[in-house]
Image 1 (spheres, rainbow, N blue to C red):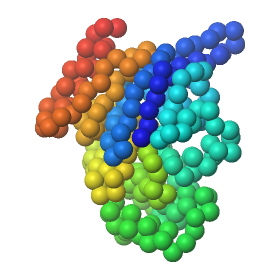
Image 2 (cartoon, protein in one colour):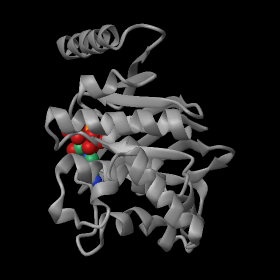
Image 3 (tube, rainbow, N blue to C red):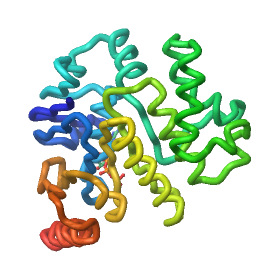
Length: 248
Ligand SMILES: Nc1ncnc2c1ncn2[C@@H]1O[C@H](COP(=O)(O)OP(=O)(O)OP(=O)(O)O)[C@@H](O)[C@H]1O
């Protein structure tokens, strides 16, 4: 589904060049829920921005299916972003002037795929994510957790190949975080969604099938959740992060 091969990315600031991603190789299979963890500044958001094609890369490949999205022109990129990628950001990015239902339908409207199935899909996503009762409200009238569940529903309306989520629980209390993670699991189990999520939250990451741990722009470790209990996987992740910080 998504394959990243030997990805390099640097930023030029004045005369200084900062190497941020130094040869990342990783993959996300269809239907997988994959997490990315690592210390602040290790390159997690930069990695997600490269995959979203928001920033150009220095070298390497980002294969979405058969297509290397790092080699596309702007027009093709815009189409891939609309059609194949779903986004969930830390600060929700809902439009205040639209209702919850309208916000969910927005990507379909932007990609000019407005038809009856769009409304049916929006209503069914509202049901799956338990936001039917608030679908005619506006973002200012709902809670943080409800906003984020709306954002997950919006990310799914175009039936994307992959959902990219950057710290989706970052601004939420633990109850709302649990509800958001539940919505990702629901998206994976009921809709077969493929999800790549950057997170600092070991509880959120412990629900992933696999967690890629970055250090200084490189893959430092990959933890697979086999059939073990979630709590045991969370402990493994915490131990790995602890070891990473002790290494300095
Ligand atoms: N546009 C930019 N110009 C220059 N440097 C940048 C730019 N964006 C990111 N960086 C640098 O790249 C490094 C990685 O940043 P990034 O945001 O990817 O880290 P992160 O792992 O997501 O961190 P955090 O967990 O704090 O969000 C940091 O040192 C950051 O200062």
